[in-house]
Image (cartoon, rainbow, N blue to C red; front, side, top):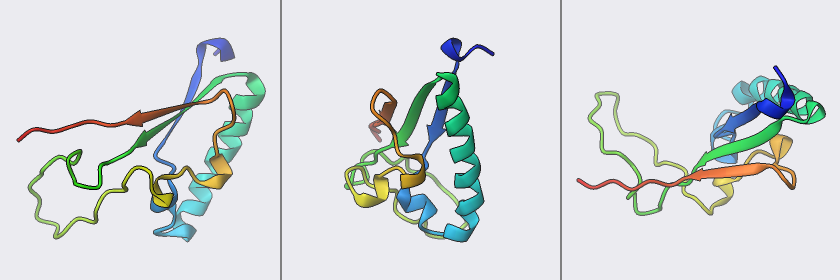
Length: 104
């Protein structure tokens, strides 16, 4: 693979997810940090995909499930929606905010 034709896409490495279970996420973040360092060193494009949900729930799909109540999604613009510091974007790297609407 040639770096100029590759992109490392990091998806939802958010404080709100990692903070729920730091012990579980620690090895995942450590592995992602090593991969990120290698991609940066090779000159690959780096992008972060984030789901910035609206506080009013307007970007949340209504689903039926039998597993009990679901935790609220992480709301865009809150500290929980920030990328974990270990993987923080640098200038010139891309952040793709996935904002979508639903109509029912």
